[in-house]
Figure 1 (cartoon, rainbow, N blue to C red):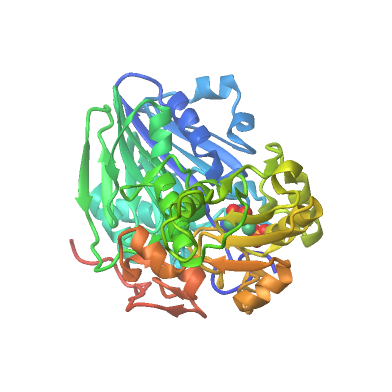
Figure 2 (cartoon, protein in one colour):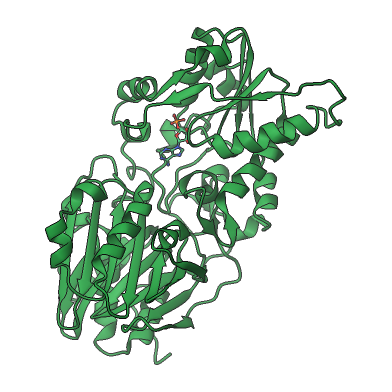
Length: 500
Ligand code: AMP
């Protein structure tokens, strides 16, 4: 089944990167372009920038990678010192340019541009309500729903009140950069499901999905945007104002950002992703270490985990005792060579192509594995294609035993909140025990990391994380799924609250 065919998320899944800048006296287009390059891993289907020159919007949105989507002339024509940008992840089946972003719209009281990372769980209800009131939609994405709702609220409320009303109506996961005329805003949903941070440049301010984008601009990370917070950048690039518009008891940070999705050099919710992954690797050794000759990562996703795992393995034995003198511990080596020119195997439409892609992408280094017992470390198993192929490849290259260790718990349920994971039917762990999965991938042993280890490493309770894909219980009420906390879905169709 195509992603989105199961449960509520029938529209496109917005697994994306967003950015916004306001500069004192320099065109915004180039910094936005560089920031999008830094966020390329968050989306490869399309890239776009919308700027504002004080009088009007300028936009350029194109399919493809950032480097292919923009020519030098395109950047020249994007006038103005403020702007927003977006990279969009491919979603199987829908390669629809009308869903490419930033989404822009002009209305009675000005212009709006929106870049969205996340996925609403009540977009269909709001869309219906707005359509009844005469709003015409040009795409099937939930970003346009947010844009129309905000545009409607801006007709009779100031910017901050209008955003608040929209936040009280939309439900689900959203990190947004918005441009209202020449003012750039950042909004993070009340659960802080997707990341968003603020950075300071020498001559302005930036909002971005990940701090690596701020580094690229030689800026300094100020802090994460707080869950439920609105940040308004001064159009002249000299500062910003913030408003805590919605507060909820618990957050619902996506743990998978830390495990797989974000760049290891980004700081998310105060944690450097690389160190989190190394720490998870150390815990993986403590929970499920197996003595082998060699530990090797699946490049690149398993690298930080494997380095932490091997460090811990060289300090203590698999039983947790200090290594005695003369015990060489385990070797940490590159056993798989990656072909960097092959895209993510994940986006291959058929299983046959996915299997071929793993072979195209990864090739074993014979001297590392031949005649050895080997532990392969990866961050996650989704469909099981990669692990099955790798066990086979490494055995073919002469390994005596192949053990798999995974830095996340089994993925048992789909993500409805912005990560294009797979449908339940495709997930190898949805209806199999770990032992059954081990048999399927033909490994000599297989272990996953526990949910407790994740919560402990992120120094937070289960109740402040979104663990939907590993528990099947979500922090939002997703139709047809269980929720792990009390949530109230906003009533749609009521008049906006009296002034707030
Ligand atoms: P699979 O082969 O389907 O089991 O996918 C597992 C591999 O895909 C691992 O190497 C992961 O690093 C990577 N992966 C995990 N989640 C995703 C995702 N949402 N999109 C693309 N790749 C992913």
